[in-house]
Image 1 (tube, rainbow, N blue to C red):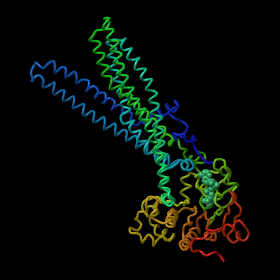
Image 2: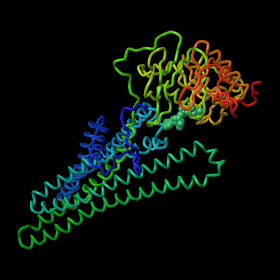
Image 3: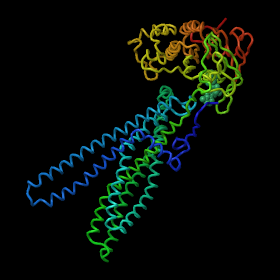
Image 4: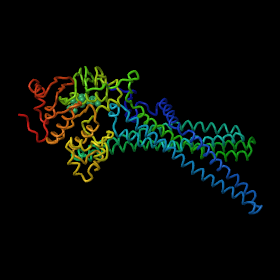
Length: 606
Ligand SMILES: Nc1ncnc2c1ncn2[C@@H]1O[C@H](COP(=O)(O)OP(=O)(O)OP(=O)(O)O)[C@@H](O)[C@H]1O
């Protein structure tokens, strides 16, 4: 069974974030808590910014008072006006400086949170289990780490501060209105309560629509990424139009969800504006009636209405900020789905002292059972791979790659044991175990921009052995023919080099790790007979003091093996040398006779 720390809910068809959606109040509360958590490292800074913002509000409020003072003292001549005018200019300057500082600091704070979030997500993905990470489309990860985190920047860079500062302005005005007439204030508060109730629904729609839009963008990115990886196949299959249509439909779906979110946002803005305007009219009607029956003064009504007009901006700001926060919370939910990825379980504390015993290396499988999603793939597999070349052969799907995965602990056995030097690999620290092994995966992908970087990837201080390793895989003359030698760029996915060269480079990298156990999964499948011969000689040399465990369909590799393990339908069918199995096992004979077991130019055995 695949080992996971947290159990991942299956992706939601619309949002792709698991079963939690914006319609779920518990999910909303959890997202709010998480957003508050993200702000933890910058809460003090945000507090300071809030104070600055309030000062900026204060500076705006003082301006009319000073202007009024200037108007009242006009008749005293220009001399008397110098100081008030200078004061006005000073206030304006302070307002400008505060505004710049707030905008800059808020923007920077938002970016910092996004940067930290991206770092954490990257760490989370890299620590995830192989099963959990490989199950998700790559484009989905890219979208969550790239674009969803950007949405958060908007939320933090302004919305949070506005959501805190604007209510203070609203509260201030409300208190002043209360000093004029409590009855009228009750009316205003009642009307605002109705508005807030209506806004709640619109805001929920914003959150849902943004989450759906982001999920559609992720699907589009995944579709595009698949096409780019298989670009030649797409061209050769003549499916450009079909792919364009498919990716286009994802873009359309993202557009439709985007329109839904914009529509909901428009409602938020309109309801906020209309609430103030409507309240103004109702207060005017009620106030006029009260002025007429003498229970309210004209001056009080005018002052009350002025405060209502002043409220227009902060009320709109509050709801605009709420809308941005709803978008941010949608992003939080999508980002958190990555943070919930099951991680590789650390080594159990009880066995913390277990180390790999010294001595000649040995890999041993004892009664190993393993399945994917309760479908058994390996059944009671047992064999020993001592120092030397051990080759795993078997029909496609027999479980060869799966066996190598269990040795590297990409997954753990359901039953039985895999032992390295007599120690169950589950008791070992993963880093130590993997340090002892070098692995070339079936597709032999290259990491690094240049030939040198690709060959040295994951090898520490191995540069001195680079030339020898390249010679071992017959790549010296190729590297020497490159325009910039080892520093020639190999293209993003290594497509600038042939499949065989890529495989050999991957093997050179594995050799440079100097590991006790070399795991090679179909590492010679694309080699010609001559390069394969060089590589096999080199592997034979390596196998004198380490374990080389190779999965192959190639006869030439099998013929060189010190021992063959023949897998059939997840079980060990036979173990022996090539000649013995050729004589005794009809299934092995059939495999050997099958097409594709020989390198180009290789002759069949006599
Ligand atoms: N991640 C996975 N999830 C579910 N099933 C899987 C997964 N990986 C492999 N399988 C299944 O497990 C079985 C064994 O796969 P495995 O890749 O180990 O076979 P193999 O012998 O290496 O095949 P090949 O020679 O074609 O590479 C296959 O039926 C395969 O479909």
